[in-house]
Length: 357
Image (cartoon, rainbow, N blue to C red; front, side):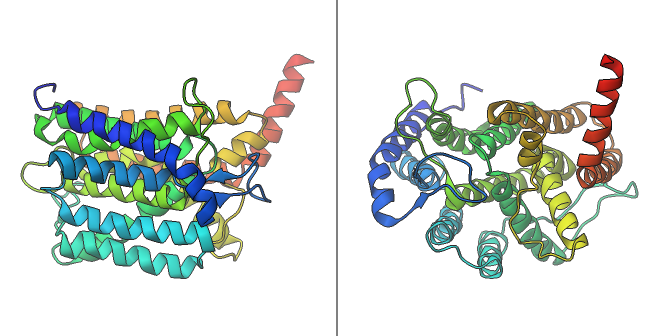
């Protein structure tokens, strides 16, 4: 692993991110890129929404200066620039959900058509051989990209959640790259990790990083979602792939399941699936009595469990169709629990009281 690690780009990405987070704090107030407490926002004070901007530019600067990643993925930065700009406009002006969705499909098209980074095969997820998509792969990729972008965007509800979940997924990618003897590819996810860590430190107000509280904003959550899906598609396709497609699904399993359950619940109620609410997993945990920090730890452990299942399945070569159907069954169970969570919690409280009594 260390033979392929280039520490100069990593240190540069880290320190540029730290510098930009501090410098952009007053700039964010001037630009109006700030988050104020409201009906769906329980934080205290006015917080800058420039974490995503800092992460993007730190990775960009490090890549330009050291020629580590940009030489291989110039189209990534093109797509990322558009998604960050879209997120900034949404943070500032609250764009309509439909308009935002159309723009996300445009960014996904850059990845699929311009960069030619698209899903060509789903693997043997049914049990009758590999499913090759052909030209349908382009359109399937558009849906995947927009889905993952919004899954991470919806995860961004409490301090450290979207960033922490991203860190788990990226570390999982690094592990799989090492296990598949594709160590030459690890600088991609490692560079993103180097830019993500300082954001998390400031976002969670860790000792030594207090005083510059910051949120990643829609620009950050959509940027990190795009980055993750870009890497996952790149590493699951081709003859030298680092993991099977179904393994990538498990890596981002919790964000995908939470998004699917939320959209199903909204559609069932006759609401727009894009309509924001306070029914996300983190809100449920907090309404059940957990603190925000306990909620963060619990959800990250759950997300790590999903990723761990995917990694173990890859290591011991569990058949793809078993991994796929297991995921679908778990999705159904997850959705049922989320739909009936308050009834389930009431029953558990009654059982607890009867046991105590």
